[in-house]
Image (tube, rainbow, N blue to C red; front, side):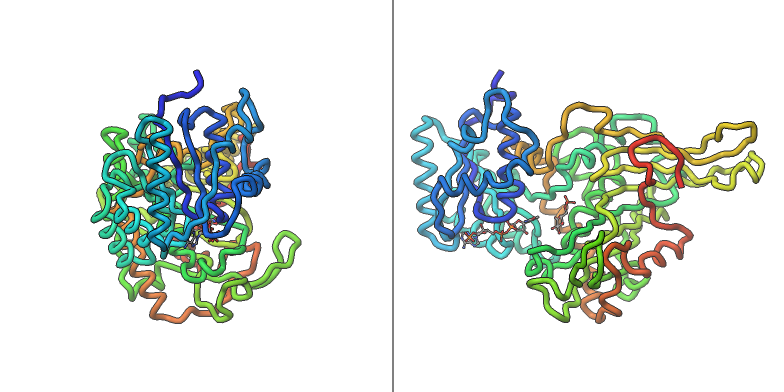
Length: 509
Ligand SMILES: NC(=O)C1=CN([C@@H]2O[C@H](COP(=O)(O)OP(=O)(O)OC[C@H]3O[C@@H](n4cnc5c(N)ncnc54)[C@H](OP(=O)(O)O)[C@@H]3O)[C@@H](O)[C@H]2O)C=CC1
Ligand SMILES: O=C1O[C@H](COP(=O)(O)O)[C@@H](O)[C@H](O)[C@H]1O
């Protein structure tokens, strides 16, 4: 069978088709979907930007680096040239009405050629300030009507703060149906993130202990080694709290903390996540310094390479107060999670690229072993290693081989690469496939976005009021500022990293 599902003919407009995200993520994802037979039989991809580029040059530019980003080489008779035949470029200014007349006519014409009204996806891969302009013009020109035929995809950031997110949601609500709107959080498309739900809700084993009776605390780490690269202009208006915590980190928290859904219906899942976000205790602005820490990377060395400090990056103000690191402590005020701290940290130019969710269980209630047997006794720990290492591991005590009773912590590991031959899809592949098929489960609903903004608003306010202290306060290749260690150490814990013997069962520090 050539296509897994019979999908209607589809036109995919990528607004911002000449941009970075399109080249690095969107086109490789669409190409991989095509290779895997997940694209509709009839499709057209139209990149739109202002730069004048011919179709041929556009395709050549997209192909540069494709080897690096595409998972697979040509197979099953499918190839880049055959895919690219249906990829076009149009030079249009998306602030001008003329452009939308042209887009309208293009869709009409293509519908006639195919003999059917096509599904149309508009992917807004443009700067966020263009989003309301484009949405308004799409509606004014009756291009994005309120039928299921048209879908509109919004990249992050969705709003700059609670107020602007509300305004954008209000505008979109006045123009489109919620079923047409896809707000992307690419972490939700990651295979290992989706597997948190499978792990929790497809297995009966863990649910009875998934609560404050057995869980001591939870940690979420989303660490990156890169700096802001060429996105300094954007990042300096954003910072780590907006860029990572408001969306990706809080969504991970929701996956861990949500109640079991009654079905896999997209609204049911999203309702359960909104419940978590609404239950997160709002930190008083005056108490933010006790619950949240910020940092900014200094100049220094990383993996043998000299790297600039944040304030020396292109597009960044030389006295920028913007944070490149955040650590915070949250509580989810409900029956399940009462008094269980959720520690989160994220930052750039850290020691390792790693995204980890760690569930730390409480200590065994009674040590029946002799004290000398258990000097490295550790409480049980479950770790979801999201990336780049992809595994789920459970730490437990085992007897070390020998005549003496000596206990050491070991890991039982489920490793994706060892368990499955198939290569996992990139997040954008999963998400684009869902938009093509009209499945909103992995996309943010309006109330979800607003609830997440509400969680971070007190921190934004407190940091806006108080000048940052001691910036730049952490070195490249470190784990962030010392205050982040203090935040968790005050509660008698320390940040968890993956054991160095990653991927194999073995002893655990
Ligand atoms: N790049 C990344 O890694 C990530 C990006 N994002 C988000 O994705 C979006 C796009 O980011 P990115 O690709 O990096 O941005 P770029 O700056 O690389 O690209 C912006 C695109 O917008 C086009 N554009 C700008 N103004 C107009 C206009 N008036 N009319 C038509 N086209 C216009 C540009 O075309 P031209 O220059 O030809 O006019 C270009 O194609 C942003 O919202 C960003 O926050 C989210 C996560 C990661
Ligand atoms: O959304 C964003 O995510 C990336 C990190 O994504 P990952 O999939 O590589 O973990 C981050 O670098 C970027 O600043 C942020 O906008």
